[in-house]
Amino acid sequence: MNDPIIERARRRGELQMAATMPEDALDYLRQVYRDPLECTHVRLKAACIAIEYERPRLAVIASIGGDDFAERLGRCIERSTKARPVIEAQPAVNHKPPPMVPDRRYRRPA
Image (cartoon, rainbow, N blue to C red; front, top):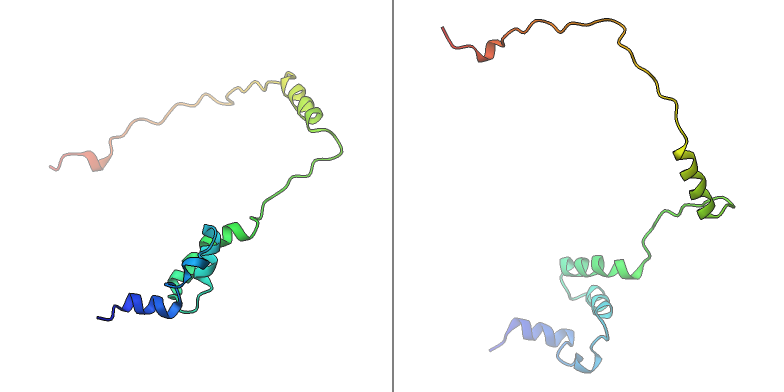
């Protein structure tokens, strides 16, 4: 009886691979996505997982001037504790709301 999975494994050399098994998961993923006999979607999935560990992630790095961060933080805290001028807002006109008119959508049909 020829099992297609075992035959495919023999073709790929997986049955003889016991001595050459990858040392870690990343090596295994590399082996999968480099295998031309593997299905494309399996290779793509392995490559998507492996790339997170192979390439550094792009990140934004803030560059602060020559000052020490602690000094800048202290100045910001000091500036935030200062009293700020309060704007006294007064309504310009005494405004009365419009009279309440019931909405026609909620009336009972006649």
